[in-house]
Image 1 (cartoon, rainbow, N blue to C red):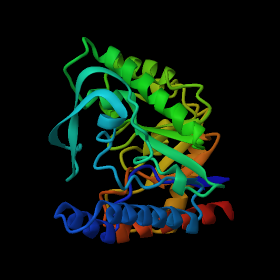
Image 2 (cartoon, rainbow, N blue to C red):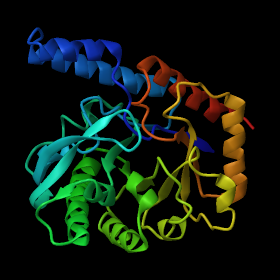
Image 3 (cartoon, one colour):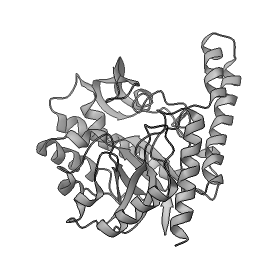
Length: 315
C-alpha cells in the first residue's frame, strides 16, 4: 500500500494573504484575522482529505518560517536578521540563542491546530530537526554545537510529548542542513535524534534541497521510522546497495516548480524506488514545502498526490 502526505508548509490562500495585509494596516480586528486563519486552515485540511492523503497536516499557515514559532515555544531564543532560506527566494529570521534552550510555558495551540483535525485523522506535526535548527542559528550561549543540538533535541522531545497527548501520530523533523553536514556533525545530529526516540509516535527525518549520497550510511542508522529524500536532488538508483529497513518518503513531486508533473511519470518513479531500495513502506510526497508556489498551483500538486496514490494502489 502506497500512502501520500505533504512534507512541509503550504502557501497561504489569497484570501488569507489579503486578510493579513488588512490586519497589518489596522483595518481588520484580531478576532476577524483569527477567523480567517481558522477558515483557511480548515480549507487546507479539507483539500488533503478530499484528495485522499493519508497523513494530514494543518498547513502551518501561521508560521512565517520554520524557526520563528520556537522563539515563543522555547526559552532562550530571540529573533535575528532576515536571511535567505537556502537558494530560494524566501527568507527566515535567524534564531539567536541567548540562553539555555528549554520548553517554555507558551501553549502550542497557535502553531499546531490539533482542534481542527478530524477525529479520525492520522495527523502529523512538523518541526525543525535539532541539527538544522542549531546549524542555522546564531549561537551566543553554548560552547559547542553538540551541546546546543542536545538541548534543542530535548526541548523538541518535550514538545513532542505534548503533541502526542493531543493525538498526533507522526512527528516530522525537517533537516535540510544534513545534506551538507560533515562526518563529525552527522554524529552530533544522530545523538540529537537519540533524544527524540521512543516517544510514542512515528518519527520522520525529512531531508531536501540537496544530495544525501555522502550521508546516507549514517542517516540509515538514525533512530527514526522514516527517511524523506528529495528525488529532484538525488537519483534513487544510487541507493541500490543500501538496505532500507525502514520507511521511505519519496519527494517525487517538485515543490519548487509550478509545472504539474504527469501522473504516470511520478508513478513510474515511485515504482522504481520500490524496486531499488525495497523499503517497509513508501510515501509519495513533494520534494519540500509547497510554500514556494502560488496556492492555486499547490492545490494542483495536492490533487496530483492523490491521483498518483490511487494509481499505484490500483495496480
